Amino acid sequence: PPQAAVTKGLGGVAFVPNESCVDCHQKQASAWQSSHHAMAMQEATPETVLGDFQQAIFKEGDASFLFSKGEGDDFRVRVEGAAGDAQEYRIAYTFGVHPLQQYLIELPGGRLQALTVVFDVEKKEWYSLYPGETISSDQAVSFSGRYQNWNVMCAECHSTAFEKNYDPQTDTYSSTWAEINVSCQACHGPGEQH
Image 1 (cartoon, rainbow, N blue to C red):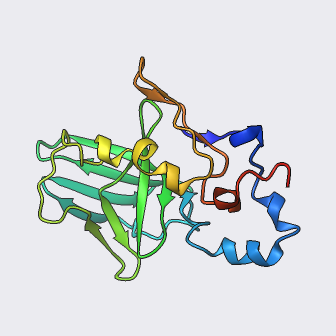
Image 2 (cartoon, one colour):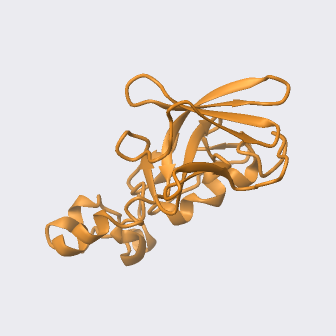
């Protein structure tokens, strides 16, 4: 899966951990910690997952999504197609926080995929990003399709110093980020020399 890595910006200056900014910029860091930027992407934990994972079921086209909580802090989605084929995935990350929250699953080849069923945090209900459409698993807009691929479509804006690291020979990703979310350095640049 994608991971944190030491990343250098233009001129070879490295990005530093978010905590490096806090000592001198406590007021700004405090405001940032409750911002949408801080919560743009987070590991899926009981504190970050806002969706209903108490055996909630949502139907999208010919697929059913069953959202459940596994053992410990494990969140899962079971996707069942019209033919009765089913696959269960662990929710790896939350994506966004308001007005909706999406969930990312890990697929082979270093891919993170965004589910097309999302949680409305105000109405406290699941809904489809493609209402009224029948989406088959082989379509580009399905949760396993290329338009829902985090590595290509989402990560650059939701993480700091993102590196796609795509290998066309193996059709795999070894993606990295300096920070999982939109940190101070996403706008201000790498902070090593500051």
